[in-house]
Amino acid sequence: MKVSSQSLGARRALLLAGAMVFAIPGSAALAADAKPVLKAPAAVQDVVGWYFFGDVEVGGRALIQDPPSGFGRAPPPDNWLTPRTTESRARFEEYGEIRPGFFLDHFRIGAGTKDGIYAVQVWSQNAGYNELSSDNLWARDNGWNNQSYYAALSKIGEHYLYVNWDQLPHLISTSAKTVHRGAGGTLLTVDDTLQANLQANARFATTAGATGVTARTNIEGFVNNAATNVTIATKRDKGSAEYRFTPDPNWEFRVDYSNEHRTGTRPLAINWAYGFGVAPGRPTDFVEVAQPLDDRTQNINASAQYIGTSPWGKRWITNVRYSGSFYENSLKYFEAENPFCLTCLTGAGAGNRGPNLLRMPLAPDNMANAITVTSALDLPWQGRYTSTVQYNMMRQNDPFVNTAINGLAPAPLPGTSLDGRVDTLLMNNVLTTQITKDLKATFRYRYYDFDNKTPERIYTNYVESDSLLGVGPRRNLSIAYTKQTPARR
Image (cartoon, rainbow, N blue to C red; front, side, top):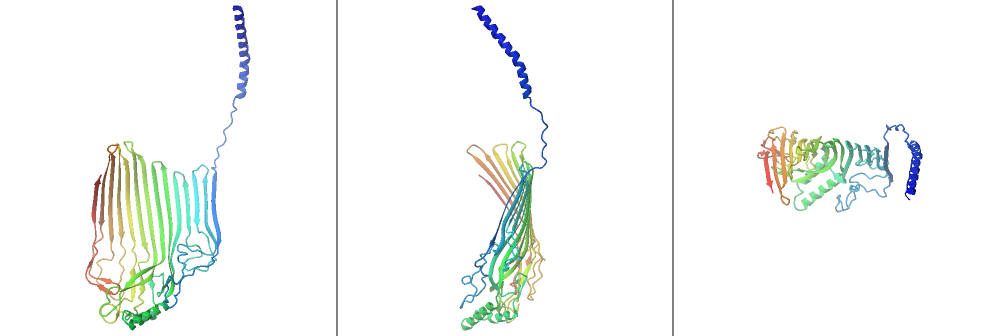
């Protein structure tokens, strides 16, 4: 048994050795066959792929019934233009014309790189050009009057630029009527014959009995026969641009600018004094006229923001911002002839008295500049501190408008302009801290200083209602104050 066992073990050893001898060369050959073949790397493409998208909407419009202007007269006995008895398209086209014919509602074109780094988009609304309209009461040209254009360009995560321009029309009325000529300008005139007729009847309009009824009826007839249609509408043309730059995760810079130009007309009631005897008294009635508009508002903002870590390893944010606003009115005043005065007098004396010409000052030029610093800081313990510091300078120095247009001689003004100068300083501080799990404390302190440097002036007399001199001195009081508001809870 022992010999047989040893023989069997020897035979197994020989078979294993032979298998190893035959296996080693085979394994080497298989390994050689499996060795990877080295190839030259593929060339990197220099051009980044782009994708594109867009859409457009076009169409045509036909109006079965185009609303009229609404100007007309109510049937007798009213004979007046009233919303109850007339139709007007002012509401139908309040914020933009609706014309028959071809129109391009909108288009949008966009593109970007496939790696998501660059993107651009251009968009427009109401960009069509229409030659088919025959009604052009308040449009300035044959194009739409409520167009919008927008463009955006960006390098994602670093540069962002937005540019926009749009029009915002507001049709107030197409059915208004007026006895003044020259609507939209700075001088509104009235026919001399109409002024003479109204002046002759005005002094009897408040008389009781048949005389008063006749005078009022005559006035209504003269006004109705002389009134002409006027469209009252405004339009704002506004352009704006914004740029944002983020060079790294800690810094962000922004700047934006807008320029808005407003034109057109809007209704404005101006008062006039009319009387008999020694003095015409204070304003006794109002005349509503079409006030011209032509002003511009420019706004600019620039800011820098830092988000980082404080020396003790907590979050820290600081933002510095400049804001500026500039208003410029190209119309300093407008004038309107008084419908009820052709040969009226001013000052002492007998006869019909009141201003022949009404002068209305308009909003003066002004500007404001402000610097704001805002910070937020996490404290070493469970607390947070935030603060805002703002300094603002406001200025208005337009020359005074001379309202003595009827031979009045007021005392010399104490200055040629308001010379308005107001500076404000705001400091607001808030501290919050977590005392315990269930107890939290907040401390606040606010300081506001309103420093009015406008010189204080005394006016010995003044022109009132373009017709008489006000009695007694008047003073423009320069108000200045400081307010502090400490609080805790």
